[in-house]
Image 1 (cartoon, helix red, strand yellow):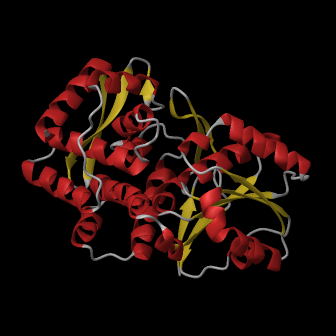
Image 2: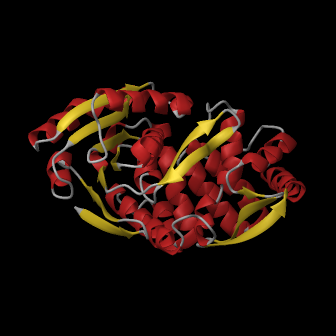
Length: 346
């Protein structure tokens, strides 16, 4: 079992990573016994809901569960409202806990509800997907989507703990596991060429992959918890990726969208050798694909992305494997970058 300490300015907490984790026992070590509203989607709850409830109850917690339909389309204000109404009916108060059991959608929605219910309460992340484990469960970003785009309504709200049992990855469909690998590749691209090499060569275990990814994210978050500058590097591939997800009606997963974003930018800014290495790794995990949406429409969507400011887009551009730079560009310049990158990939 490994632990990574996250030292955010508003809260410090540990990310526990291992196999066969007893969530109830671990949670009782960091939080007093209370009521818990377990939040999950119908797919994850069917796999791990009862086991998690039993673990929490054995540790002495009083447990209620809220289960919603899986998928990005459920990550909206309406579902968050239903959750919070259920919380009032079950008598959940500020001294109690929300627990997110699932992937990024579950974690984002649960964290958002925790950030606004009674003006803020504690919550716990129990990620069951690789993507949530390496990325969205850590760092305190919570959000729901609007029809116009992803994550446009949210808050920074750190969890009190994260418990990641990598055994849960065994139940993931190949495409969902690959979504998580896209985020892991991103960490190698922006911060750690050695990590990229281990992913490239297939020489890193799931537990070590999560540990190193979380270590990188923790370092970045400690420098810029509220996403004012340095933390923007975590958005590599995401501006185009989010636009692709939105245009597809979320039929294209987050990892696939981010992979396209990384590949397009890599084709423009990386050396031929580094771009080829990036594309080969993405293909290895079934991620590489050239965007087929209208380039102008895709570029315009960047204006409503949460990383836009004024008339400018904060672009994360690759310099080499392990290094990126931040650059503000206009929508017109962004469209030209996409056009050039997609043209080279084609």
